[in-house]
Amino acid sequence: MSTAYFNGEFLPLEELRLPVWDRGFLQGATVTERLRTFHHQPFLLEEHLDRLERSLAATRIGIPETREQILDAVQEVVLRESVETSLKLDFGIVIFATPGPTGADAGRLGLQPRATLAIHTVPLPFERWHRDFAEGQRLVIPEIRQMPADVVSPAIKNRSRLHWYLADALAHDIDPSASALLLDHAGRLTETSTGNLFLVRDDVLLTPGPESTLPGISQAYLRDMARSMGIESRTAPLTEADLSGAAEVLLSSSGYCLMPVTAVDGRPIGSGRPGVMFERLISEWSQRVGVDIRRQGP
Image 1 (tube, rainbow, N blue to C red):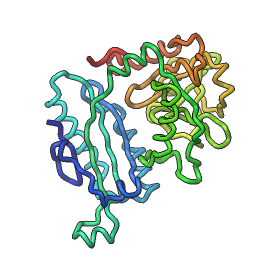
Image 2: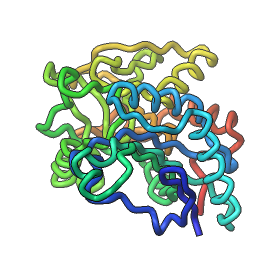
Image 3: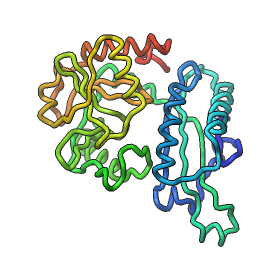
């Protein structure tokens, strides 16, 4: 049975509950990190904790746990999951924090008015990724726009994601297998609900900057890895017109690491198949983590 951490205690994952009076439920006031393991070891954990601390500070969510306590809790949850996982499969790790109950609710219910912190594991959807690695993901640009930075900073990784739910629903109406790629209000490309966008043009990796996209942990890792391979990478304002001139389009994410995109709004990217740059980068990434990322899982 998988183990979760919740407000200082370890408990069976099936017993993890967020009360209806928690502001994470009432207001969607939740910051989060999602990472994965390789060989049952958390990948880029310190970087994810750095971003979590920035999100907590930006939202004024004052959890009582120190960084060291969070790190220890993650390692304990991973250790217990590793013991329980018989197939030696890697898994995802979710960390989320909320402000907890309001002061009025805490007083009315006799609760300690503390912020909520939870950590738990999730299975990784290897079967779906196998298909997407081979065929590429398809994207649709819906009418819904990215949340403006003067409303909610894109640097805060959060779960107030109703606009993403609606955007993906619109994308699915057009193509049931597609995900939404959002424009900002200036008409520039941003990101999907799960990954940062890269365009390959003249053997250069181009990615939107932090003005309207979440600074991705895997995005930064990919750019550093590419530079070590002699591949230039830079941020740039990108529009829909840039898609037609791209040799390849890629998505980076902490789960699948790197994914090819083979069509946007029904129009093929490049040859309409995963390209050479994707092959180079995913092979290098796999070598670094000691796992064939594309073929992992059942």
